[in-house]
Image 1: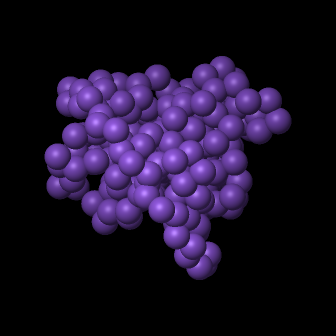
Image 2: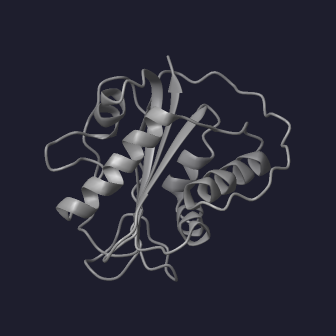
Image 3: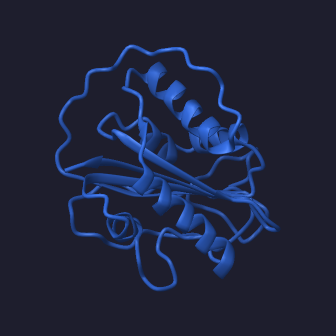
Length: 193
């Protein structure tokens, strides 16, 4: 979708941001809708979950602004979650690996989708890192140059926003691949079994 005209699922192959969230569902993975590859896109994959238990919001704590891009995204996510009454997400190395691998793969193989050309969807890719999840979700984006701009795109899309503000998620991994045609962004969310 064009950043000036938010339309999550309706994009044509042009320079746009095209969100399509990955909705939570039970343990059986299935493919999500995906738009054609275009720059400045965002798309969340269907979240999967067992029935979530209510999560009390933690007390937000001030933390210094991170200087790295991934840390900036996580800080912005946790700021939005605190405003919505959700607890902060903890960075998880396995989710970070899944997210970074997916961003790298999209850049290397020239696709923009939650399901890679080999057919692996977010749940399968996350499980392959050893992360045993009861719920997971994913947001992807392409073309936004900064942590702030990709977060703005995601927060202006109902599906992405829902993943970011899903209080049942406890962990996050963020991957970004910078290069011509990018950057390619992936947020993987999860809660361990």
